[in-house]
Amino acid sequence: MATNPAMLDKFGLSLALVMGALVLYADWTAQRVLFFPIFLVFLIASVGVTKYGYSKKREMGLYEHERSWENVLANGLVPVIVALASPIIGWGAYVGAVAAVTSDKFASELGVLGGQPRSLLTWQLAKRGESGCISAFGTLMSLDGGLLIGVIAFALMPSITPWKMIGIGLIGFAGSFADSIAGVLEERGIGTKATTNIICSAVGALLGWAFLTS
Image 1: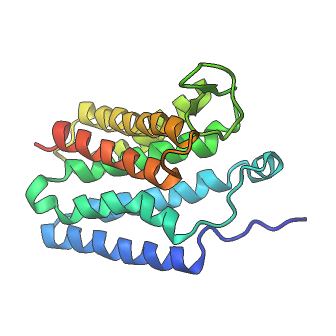
Image 2 (image 1 turned 180 degrees about the vertical axis):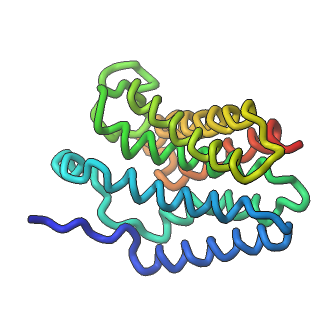
């Protein structure tokens, strides 16, 4: 029986620890408890959805058994930057960015397990796991990922209303959808998975800064 390998290689794990420390520092300097718990929820949820359906993903050739520092950097660069900039730009950009990368993670890791994806460019049926494609099930999972961050933020920050909680979920979905649009270009050799991940988190950060920060 094949074993289920580690999620991060040593360089990826080291970078994740550094990023976690920077996010914790951003919380500490702002004298609040918000950014780091959300960061932990993202990490734990990412591991969970990646491992879920491991055997089926492995059969389809879609299981990424080990993530490198490039993957960690692509997902975490924007959240860390806006976390450190939060004394100037507020908390919304960070929450929006993490909601976006969580939505994208749910869509990509759980979406491949159900439904038939279609290309955003041609609306033709596509292979599971292909960039630039969406499915009904993947869309639902994307919304779930964003709402997870919304629920955690709602529980941690009294100023976040139920409507803002839902808004966080929608912002996460918008970032994930932007990732899928960028994926159309990726499939044609323009950009990489890393650039689509950065676009995803950047869109989430911009929307979060515009609509969440009081």
